[in-house]
Length: 255
Image (cartoon, rainbow, N blue to C red; front, top):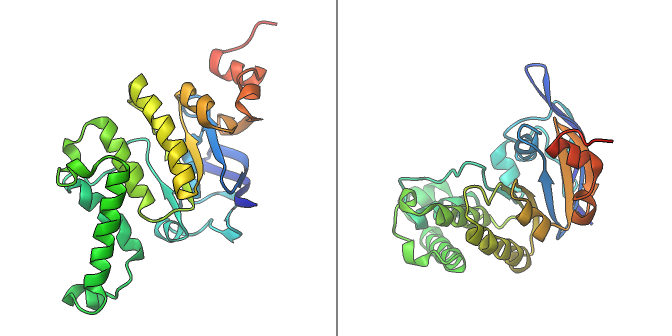
């Protein structure tokens, strides 16, 4: 079954096409990658899916619901989570509070109960804290729960960002260059983590990445973009040897 469909999606910035005629069929449980040179339109695709940008053309359906025109908070409420190419943590808050904040999108108490600490507030707050600590434990961050996010090493900040994205209980998780800035050992650990997260949380994962070792190692299907257009799509074995892909990355191939 298909969880996400992008149908002839296009987007322009000041008359310049960032994405042209983009199509995507993502099935439940997929682990798919989008690759391409810098400026190919990869992050723009994520921003269109999550409502940061509104598509100029075409439609995007999540579980049969048209999401073009919806705001980011509305799309997150439909259970689409994401991380960012440049880490966007609440740097001056604790590690625990970074995850707690994400839970409040689904908090089960009213504004009045929250202000007065009445009714369902106490029970719901304890549930949020327990769930947040459980996520930190899963990502091996429980020992830094009280630390400010800005004080974490880079690799742990990446882990925290993924943990926070999972706090909304997403069905679709978008990872925007999760291996950026990581050393080879950290990338190896991340590959294992992403595969484990998909299985443990029963997720569909779509990722953007420049680290080919990660993409070719864990993605079952890859879509290649160049200047906003799709060059190729298929399994890693096909993409690695596709002439148009090689040309986009390496320049013109001699005949």
